[in-house]
Length: 369
Image 1 (cartoon, rainbow, N blue to C red):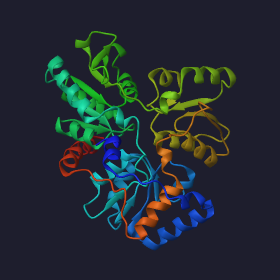
Image 2 (cartoon, one colour; image 1 turned 30 degrees about the vertical axis):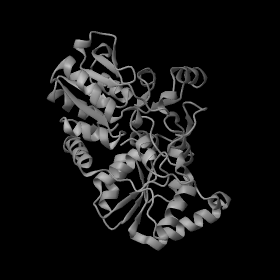
Image 3 (cartoon, rainbow, N blue to C red; image 1 turned 90 degrees about the vertical axis):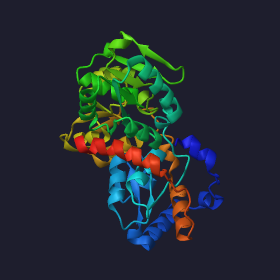
Image 4 (cartoon, rainbow, N blue to C red; image 1 turned 135 degrees about the vertical axis):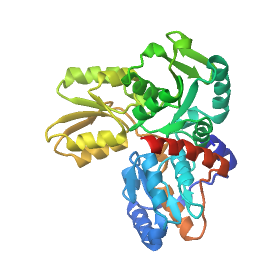
């Protein structure tokens, strides 16, 4: 189910004005008190891209799948208040047990990339691809996708991938079938396939809006079909950003996330997952210089944590992820106070059949990568 589907079904209530009128200090005090009140019954996972005002209360920081897995391991937690976006909370609901409730503090916290592939578009595209290529395709989906898409992939023998294990999963998929369909981020798919020796002319793009293929080579030679989706944050890092940096500070290392475009990744010194970026900077020698191409909240946090290094954002005009930023301290406190009053709001629930098929896709990945 996409975020738009959720918003159409849920009755949205505006944040009470009292939370806008509270001081930061008072809100922080109340959140801390409620955390203490619930103890082990409350677990707060926080994604790396969250604001500092929220991440300070996270019981664990990490990427989406990691957070869902850790939440599932916390069986004492009755309430999992997920500080991330909708698809992450869905994954947490899929992996946790029936006695646990996953709560998203603000239902508007979605992911534009995940919503670029809905189940209706995907089923239509799959029929076209089956007619075009026959039974030669296996689907893969980035974990940054809706539960419906994960379930679709599970149904047709495919698996999920993360930015850390994408190479291993693409290799596995191509050992299973002649072609892969990679959802929903074309850039991660393209960068991964290229690193494995697949040339650009051997890749096609499916445009779900115009319902057609885009291909520089012969369509019948395509080994990888990329869904025309992208991360609105990482697509804003450009070759011009890199060229400017090379001119003004040629000694600076450039590291970017593989959700950036192929052109940007090719001109960078390094690319890797969020975890890889964090570890690379952590292990870099004091005095080293880095430009990072990923979400701004995380870049600012890395800068604060490594004062011995010269670190900047690859794009100094970059804004934080707008949908991720919808989880602010006001909504976090509101959701926690409702819980304390016995009101469980904004629960994220994936239906049983969708969860079962999505789990297949996740398990196929976890068995191999």
